Image (cartoon, rainbow, N blue to C red; front, side, top):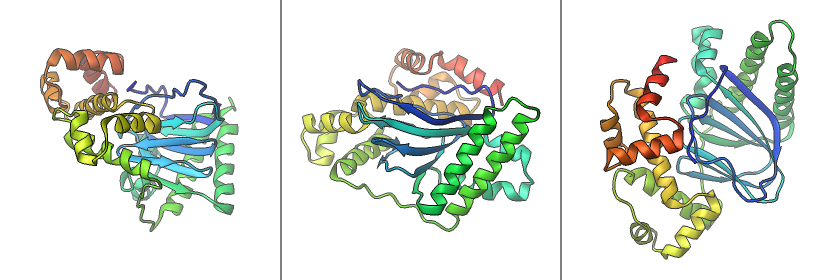
Length: 285
């Protein structure tokens, strides 16, 4: 399901989280206002960000602007181990000289969502930085939060150095990835319209059963569930960046034909009514 992730602090860290999904179900498509650093240690997993589909390899580093709809889809019954780091960019803006902020946040603000595979000494140093953060997060000593912020800045400087001058171009590594990326790109462009399997089959020149089965295999979601996730995420973006927008207008601009349907789907996926979500969002800003 689509969900808004709630953070109690400007920095959330989960080191080498290990799970085995026996039923093939993972966290649903979701978004959040925090930036995210995701590092893949081992396992078999497809990662979807916006309309990009990645078959992950150990050492993959993903940098995300959190409001883009995203999801990890691990292979069932296979060990899945990753580290995630979510941080509020305002934490960095409060902690550094203004001249340094833009270069430190560049990988998130300009590259937006990208994957980089780390190898050799670079991978070893990055994993050491993650371990150092984990050790400090378990420390309840004085100035823990301040020290965590310093460590975060150090890690982000390391990431910025890796990203300096790179041009990220994602090319699907398989025919299946290409088809799924095409489907998601079509949904991203036409989410305000009525979309049916007939439209997608015509667009991709593939049969409807094959399209539906392929999308479910690669993402863990149905095409129409993803379409509604995309519409709900659009409404969340509208509420975030247009504080004065009405619920009715957000519903229309997100592709819903009936306000009652929008309100019901929003509450089911996000956990609260759209007007309450909008008011809570701007109370914290």
